[in-house]
Length: 389
Ligand SMILES: Cc1ncc(COP(=O)(O)O)c(C=O)c1O
Image 1 (cartoon, rainbow, N blue to C red):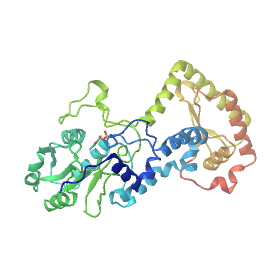
Image 2: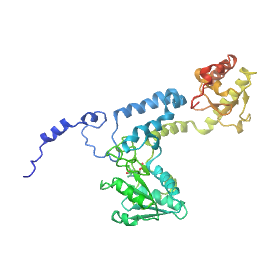
Image 3: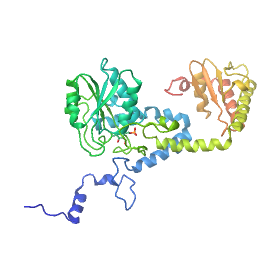
């Protein structure tokens, strides 16, 4: 008997029963749009919009460098890795969240080749994602004797012999959506004495992946597709052979970090309006003022100048030395003057000329004077070492 034809009403009932229906509300999807490209760029989670705004305005804007500790920036890659690990069947300490898929692929391929000394071949399929192949081609050109062999999918089994160091495959074919049998190909690679490197760009967050269960060696994945981590799409032709772009653009590797770049663009535009000559003039005036004020306000405080006195030999910072440098900097931070410390004894004061006022220099030295006179560095809360100063 033929299946009854589906009606809109029947489909609406599917929505009504959908156990994931509650999730849709968590995404900011435009009205009137049916978005069927989440495999290329995932939609914006509402929480992400608020979170990025908070990171920019409150954390970066107000806490400045203190955010590394105060807002846990230093642990962020590890926190995201721990969240991600179960989605791909790995332990938290086996996952690193960093760079782009292409850069990570390069790192893992290079590492994989070193783990198979004596073998010089990367094996992959002609249908693999183009930039993965570019990366392998580029690495082969860098390493003596290493080469990339490309075969059609149907020829993979035969080509997988004891000359192969790394079998590099994409789990879900980016064109057809066809899935490789991950446990089977991993076993086949191991039987041949090779490592396997999986590209999970179109798998992570969309389908179960059990890297540990199938004893996979290496894998890379993508944060901006089914994991909805933010913008980015390859900005080059899908051609299986790498043809470098003209000029410096050939150094671009994979999808650029759009959110960070958007912020950088604003910063560079602002600085450009000031002009470097004016910036340098003010910078020297600020650092000179700081040096003179420290001498004037903190005599006998054992703060030795570690920066060149001659203006033309000085950058835009002034370093002082003191054996209790770390705690002095902490005491200054507690007073709202944020400088930093570098081992073994350097107090580092940076003077960004675009937004510092001369009165800021005055206030900083006044705080330094108070810290030194009252020996505030001896307070236990200032001597305890944090991860980042
Ligand atoms: C399967 C696959 N591998 C690798 C990449 C490259 O990622 P990226 O450009 O972020 O390095 C993509 C990007 O779309 C992809 O779909």
